Image 1 (cartoon, helix red, strand yellow):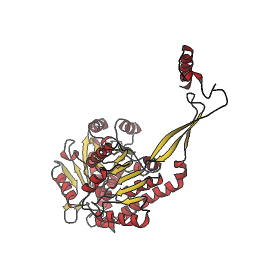
Image 2: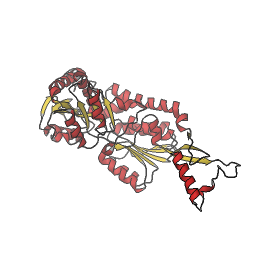
Image 3: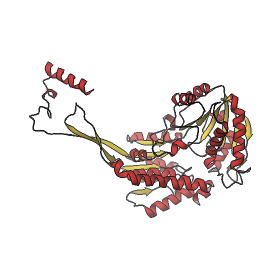
Image 4: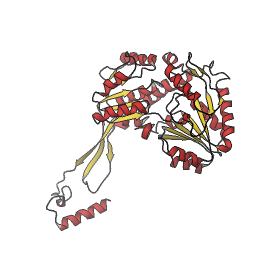
Length: 426
């Protein structure tokens, strides 16, 4: 009900993203926690022999988790779970843009969680800025933030004051590379599916398509056809399409639709009263204003390029995205794109899927964030792996356990012996 009120979230999306995904993470953590938390023993090294050495898993202390509004339960509860599993205490600050979900999180956590372990703050305040600013004035042992790059810089600045380690899960304008060798129907289908999840309000959503000029018309027609099939000819009346979270966000997206300078292939309708923006495909030039900022709405910008090398060159001049998607029937082309671009993660011949595998850390690079989580990486994000070495004490007169050449004065013989051992260890 809270997700319906804030985002008109379709039932499938609500159950999958904000219920099933967190539960899967929790179940995996419960099954694997003993293994993850165990000391990690390391092997022999001549320079430290005789010794036993390991990584001791230790919680940071008190963690601050600042959630996001687009997937309010998934993007808050998974890091909170990881922090608790690693042995930390947690303060959770939900995002009040999705106000009904924010209040519900506070009620549920206070009802079911130990207040000595988890506290929720800021849900009764209007907006987020003042509460977040006050929280960043405090000293934390770890900060985990999900949100925009703009706010991420503010969080990083607050963390820098106390040299607090932080994980920043930010956004980015995520590209889709469509080569002429690709299965165009599949590329259009999977791109439109991902673009319309949560009405495009997803940090890993494909934002624009760099499509080979030879197949761009085919791609656009296929995209139009799939959008019609997904929402049965009328997305506004469909139970499978969500709404934009607020009036200001609708106004921002409406402005992008007015100023793109391209050609609308399908969609383009906006109903401010319902907070509805139609699933839309627009042909634009590579220098269109629409290519400047993240859309965070159900609009897919399509750009024709002469070849994938032009697309690679274009992306090299832009901030690093959180996700990048490649559709190609040629493995060499896929590898060339993957190796010559930088992004948080990549799915080839699909969209979103790399973020769903528990053994693949999800996170950004550069302006799309730092650090990663999901699966074991969530536990690791809130854990300090402390190196510990225990030197062995033997009754050998120090011949091996306390070698004489470590200590001054360093004669020529001692130095030669030391360099021999160093070279041997290497």
